[in-house]
Length: 265
Length: 277
Image 1 (spheres, rainbow over the protein chains, first blue to last red):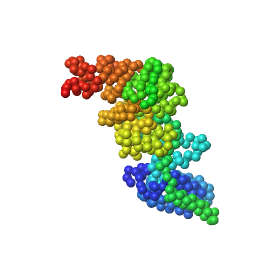
Image 2: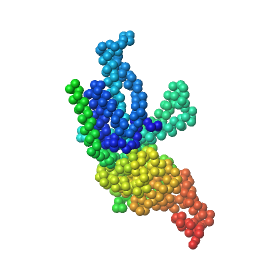
Image 3: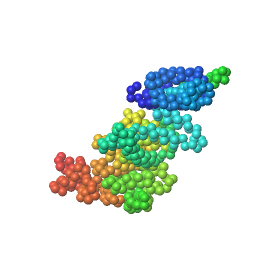
Image 4: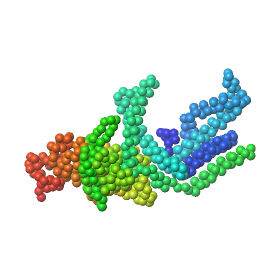
């Protein structure tokens, strides 16, 4: 898995890859709802197990995904510490005027696992769905908002243009960086101010070039009669199959089973 | 072709920017007949791009009128129909590709025209096949070469089935092989499909297939005629910093020095004159 960036789509043929992007987006939303409604330890334990199973089914390396948790370690740590110290309750440990409470430790751990589950859920979505399918799924799910006169097509066009231009802009940034380096910009200087100034010398030309690109792109869209029509071709590639129905039913059942178990206990 | 062509009547275009005025085109009157292959020639800043943009209503004339098949480009209600009729390919292939996948790029125009998915799919297949891009159908545009990107840009305009095709310096960022390939595609579209081509370029080699050349200098028409007529006026072209393609320089030299290329209109005729059968 070397060279694979966090959250970047990895091509595969697993069941999770084959699911309709709308199914995956909805399942992701269900998981988010589930961890906020049901958060006792056995619920969270079950959701973590569920996420690990999904990662296994999708054929991704579990080790890679779990290792990537390091990217959000500070967020997890800060969340845990703040909860441990700031929740009022029965003190377990006193540190000067501050005290760690038993309730704080429980809430901190709960939120820690909630965040981990959300992170794993979104990783599965992003790593098993190509950006095009993802934006087709979002467009299709948001389509009903059109009736409320919300310009969904414009929003999805923005999304699609972003996907299209990220690689082009990265290429441009590299060219500018090389040009500035050849003129003596010090990107690896030990002095942080020198480094910052060097990066500023990339940002400004990049911004200027992007504005010029935007102007050209606007003309190209205008001359091809852009009116904000839905992307019919892209959406016609979406097919809701039997396995999507089964997956959705399963996830809804998981959500409700959790709620029922909570209310019984 | 049953259209009436593109007609510019006393067109002047003035750009206003921060209190300064720049006249890009001065009182141009011009008719482009359906089925013609017109080359626009001129130095950078001569007004070629302005002329090209006026023809599909991207910009409106400051004075005068531009008509496409009799429709005034200044009337907003004509805009969509004019842009469908007049396709435009721009200079930088990177800045005119809108979608993250080639087939979506080609579908962009037809989708804006509100066509059915079946029709869009058949147009994609046709445009890809016409330009030999079948293998790139599912590629991301940024992974293609400059020449392929420009072909995708052309394919996505062709998918709207325009009657007129305007290309604003489409070859300036291409290597010689891609440049030549693009020129051949344009010639085929003109001769086989009867499509009107308006090609702007500052490279005289690009315009060798044109039926008519229009040389623009400082916003006015400087010379006009068949390539043979225009390129014969070497000193006039030199006055505004242009020169004929190599082959026409040779023709001119043979005519001047040895009087053997008189009235030659094509390379084939030149060969016949030098080596008569």
